[in-house]
Length: 270
Length: 279
Ligand SMILES: Nc1ncnc2c1ncn2[C@@H]1O[C@H](COP(=O)(O)OP(=O)(O)O)[C@@H](O)[C@H]1O
Ligand SMILES: [Mg+2]
Image (cartoon, rainbow over all chains, first blue to last red; front, side, top):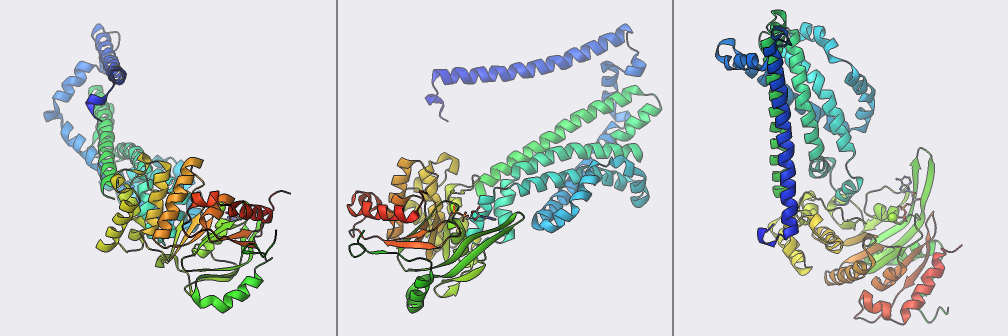
């Protein structure tokens, strides 16, 4: 778009849009500040017990004390487990979705199993997982996989199967093999679905990792939360929860960034 | 209607023609022999085609008209090798059709351009799939883009093109693979009337220039007369060839000129009657 060619109405419209965006952001920041301020005030006044509820200033102190309380180790442990679980879950989920797209027979056969597995609360598998793979990092990763993979399979398979039939027919008029149809039509057609599934998946992987850390762990934010609760260090618990929230947002951003990169590359070179 | 005055042939069923085919088979590009097809599905059996026979020689432009749902698309899909017939066979140059060989180019009603590819990359899709992407075939695709007014738009995306241009891009995608026979399935019916008239003129010019043998399905009688040397009229489902209308116009014919020709309405009336849509 050339800037000189914008009409004054257009410019006014764009300016208005920008203003609205800024207003929304400002309001969001204000809400957070208001919440924190109120929390701090009530804690200071003794209306709420800061031993049980903690307070922004105590959380701040805990966060600043990261060199002594090993926060960094716990954060990096959780991040590493989440990333590994996410990557494995995506890989396995995509592979399974491709297999089920390939063979309608296998898809039909596995459909009821997938549905049941999907609605089963995975925490129930905790003891089994620990017995099978041991009470270590492996158990945490497996828990993350258990929670995220099935959803990924269902989501991606849904996308693959909803690919525009006419596009596939067009590819067949050129004699496309199933492999070519998949690579040239189905996959690029579903790039949005794929990333939407990744966005859900990164969140679910984090859920899985924290659940796993609740069950078995010596480090990680999940461990910190459980430990903090047991010794009544609510500052530690609250700090962990807040870090977790920030972490979830950052990981989501990461996926968004990856999506933008891939989509741009795809429409330039494919 | 006096048969002697006009080169019209009427025959019921396909047996008469298949007899004739046997004599001239060697000089025919495409031979369709006693095709029949029944669709099977959960709620029953649909007989779409019943004993269809005809042949097409090199350089001919043939139209197929018929009531909607009579089996026209089915017929093209079988000829293209996408669908197994229940009976009968299709020969291209005397050999069974194989979609991967690229002998037949099949253009569907929708342009089916891939929105995530530039026009240039879209045009190369057929070549890519058939593993024919060479320096020479790229050149040819570029020549086609240049000749048919899309070269300046090669880096644009389909969404940025008009309906007529998209349709031309889809045609170039098919032509780039250099098929011996081109199949068009209502390729213009998604366009509005004005665009359609000019696009059919363009396409006619393109196909004559590239000397493409073409088999076109349409439900538009004027379109079928103005573009083709021969019109095959199908009956209702299950389709048989109801009759054949050979059209003769001056040598410098174009679709638009044909529409103004005095013979046009005679052909139109004949096909209209044979189509038997009013009952
Ligand atoms: N895959 C299919 N399964 C069952 N019936 C079909 C299928 N495809 C088409 N038909 C039926 O076969 C008949 C012919 O279809 P088609 O060849 O698309 O007609 P046309 O192109 O002449 O409009 C129609 O009655 C249609 O409902
Ligand atoms: Mg049709």
